[in-house]
Image (cartoon, rainbow, N blue to C red):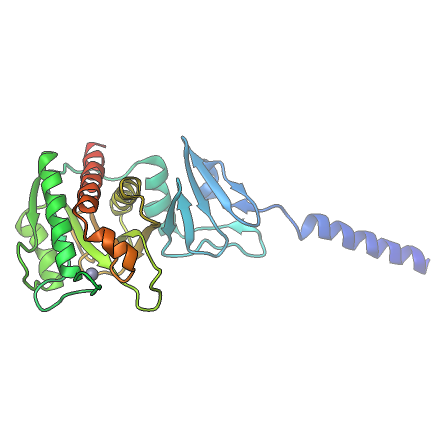
Amino acid sequence: MKRAFFFFLLTAAFLISVTGCSSTPKADKRLQKYAPAASEDNCTLHWRGNVFKLHPNRQYAVFNGTPIQLPAAPHYGSDRIYTVTPGTLKNIIDPLMTGRYPRRSIRKILIDPGHGGHDAGAIGKLSKEKNLNFLLAKEIAFALQKAGFQVFMTRNNDTFIPLRTRVTMVKKCKADLFISVHHNSSKRNLAAAGIECFAFRTPRPEDTVLAAMIQTRLIGATGSINRGVKFANFAVLRGNPVPAVLIEAGFVSNAAEEKRLVNANFRRSAANAVAAAVKSYARK
Ligand SMILES: [Zn+2]
């Protein structure tokens, strides 16, 4: 009798371990429209050829090959269900996957070369960030004008403009879109390299889509390392009334990358890529 009871316990424990405790990984019901395929390692979402890959409790996602640093990590716990925040779904996953976001006509664009005057920004061996920003911004302005847009600059020479003034200029010149141009630096990691594109920390769908389009085109045109789309609390993006992104075009702290950044050919390719992205964003 004792022995039979022991076997009963053993069988029950086995059944619980293969059924109850190890239910298969799933995505929460709001993600079901994307035919999710979930495993312990990731959860992939699908929509008309687009693929969005989530990782458990990590802010690192991937959309069609472009890294997306989510403002909040998807939750995956003992219930084995992938859950994203409402903001992640509405402002990042939905607009990227479906291509649906609030449209406005895009005619006037404000380009913002970061830093200037006494504020040099990052300093490399060959260059100062403020100058690289200005040269690339001018090239982007030229490419956008060629594409038929009316373009304004937050500064037209080497002067210091406060961050909030750059945002108030959007209304002053009635711009429909805002692009801030910067270059990166890392003192700790001299090997750090590549391009990244930022939208505001709590993005609107239109910011996310614009950032992803620009990032994808930039990587395609320059072959730089794809650091992806990120979300941050940057002053020029905060409270910006129009779709707004900030481009970090490369690292002046990386000797090999800086050599490319000071080259006019790199700037031309990057500028044409930004203009092509804005053109397709405006057309949609
Ligand atoms: Zn900067």
